[in-house]
Amino acid sequence: MKKEIHPEDYRLVVFKDMSNDYAFLTRSTAPTKETIQWEDGNEYPLVKVEISHKSHPFYTGKSVFVDTAGRIEKFKQRYGNRKK
Image (cartoon, rainbow, N blue to C red; front, side):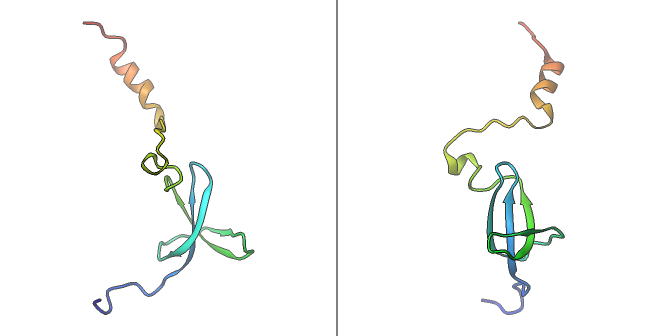
């Protein structure tokens, strides 16, 4: 491995999946200003993520439909019930 190219500031960080409230503790250099109290009673930095292995369809085997920002409604308003 090359020297002086890897970060030195690894610390324990909690990553929390906001779609299902699943959280896990791991080492990371991800920057964050939020903290959370973990199961062991200690406080760790918190990184919020949109999706993790507990909610991603590839890992769960389930197709999850998420309508963010009303995309279907916008599509229906724009194109409506067009008939040929």
